[in-house]
Length: 423
Image (cartoon, rainbow, N blue to C red):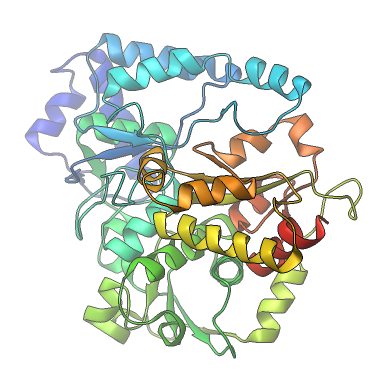
């Protein structure tokens, strides 16, 4: 790798041994992927995927202490993934004990994040790019992020440039102010390896469509045709919410870091089929294919027919418009069934800043009346322990389904279960 004088000086220890190790780590990371140089991180804000103070990660906290003692802090204010705990989310006494034990380092870790440069006490969300949060990169900006759903959104919808980094690498990139140039930071790396043709008879469910594409193309870049028929050719609130959920599914059910949607996403609008690699294979998605994919999801509950004890919606965190729309959907479902409150304990999750704005609207009191709980929690972190894994939890998030024991249902099925059937 060819380094600039500034980068070489850091590697040689001009700013101390700790900073030299940061640079050495980034250089080794880049060389592993064939990077020939470093490029500056140009976004105004960073983001870190690690937001949970889990006890077994003590070596990480010790590493962070070393960095902080050396003054190796982020050159950018940054946001972090959602907090793992919220006392308002239903839990048993035993779960509370497990949570306290699991996240015993939470206070220590959040203190470290503040010293590193956390944007503020509310800056905890996986959807940091939402306008209410204030960490929305501009097209062409170079990022040092790791959160997979945020990376794929920033690359695809916003046209920023970021690789799928690890949690520690992302922080080191923000500290150094440089990242190795390879993969999705390069023009060639952003070309499409697959053509995906949407031939459905109705608007495909974002989470299932993203899952199908992710499992097919894995880490490759898809160029998607025919989706604009269903979600339009304007990146408005509704389309962006759809792409948030769609992208998260491609990233978690596969390893997609960038997708192009014909006539909609920035690079597809500008370059169209010039983005396609020669001889790119085609994957056709119709109604039958989406049904096949959905039916392939395993149910790992001990009793597959158990009555759900909890429903999580919002992985990734819900947008303001989604909160409003889902309030109406729950209200309508309850009205049709003659019930006053949801039949399954249900949690909607969103960013603290989005929740703050939502609470200013008429919808906040309306949602509360339905019995739905609104939280800033990370559903995945709630589920990631033995007691929660045993719970029959339902969701329409393919990310949560993939990483936990939660059972997947479509949005329509979720509405029916929580408002009408209870099972």
